[in-house]
Length: 415
Image (spheres, rainbow, N blue to C red):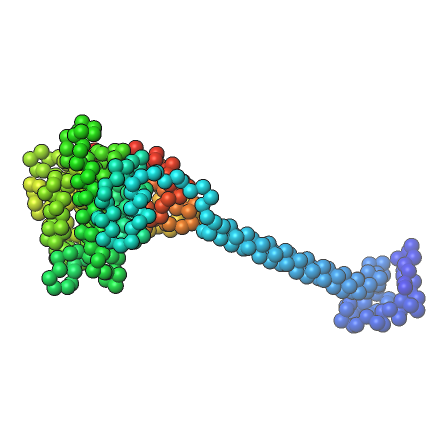
């Protein structure tokens, strides 16, 4: 190759000329074709050799970059697969693992009924002979058995768990000559033997008759005022009736069905003469298509109360004289992302519960999640801490439910 001497004139060798002849004409300017114009400022080694070096190094660098990019993609893909598998396993464990330490159910006569119950007729027949420990050691809790009629043993499972609220969806019986209201979630699920009388009214009357039979002798209290819970006879049980048929059509039939409880003085009522609630063993609350205008039409006496809309609880027409529950679907709070309430959702719960409490009503959120258990119990914990009046329960028991609800059980009713 060409070697430059110490002076400014380059020395040209044959090898230099051969190298220059290999370089395409477009690789340097026209003046560079003339060796006489090169001078000290032109270095053929600098002009020609980098053309080869740049190409080789560029290919090498490009290969390395491609390899690194592929490696990163492979690593990210592996991490994504492993993360997905881990998340799937975690969710599976949450939803399918059995509860290792289920709570100890209180030993009582009501568990005998739960174990022997086969059909609606057993709700009354299994109560005889009466068991003196029927609800012994059961702690009443401010929890509501949502869609209670869906349970394997309606009413009795809820009482065994200590829930002070049960719910029945009611329909008019379309058959001619039948006065019984049917209980079920939809028209297709209705059966002639699943009536409001057989599943709820008759067994409640039987329980209260036994509970009040010897009350004066057993605890010195006046007769006819004991509730269904022996450990807390002053506790009121809520019977929530969800009107599924036309409210105006159902209303007179409901009023008629409650007469057996009313005549015995077991229905909580409001009297205009005192403008106070007279607490009794049972309080009836109407929801669904229940007609609010018919409910308040009697301005002197009421023994059916309304399930006010919690989202409209600030409305002045809802108060303690006509309402008892104030309910709303949990979905109205919006999507609960990452299984945790947002600050705005927590503030909304706090505001709604405070407004209901100020009116003497019991705030309740229905359609709460049942699974996975850890999410359900997080929801329960938040609602309890925010002072909700009734905890809506679809599934019980669980390992956290009893200690949580026992703390919640301080909120009791009395007359």
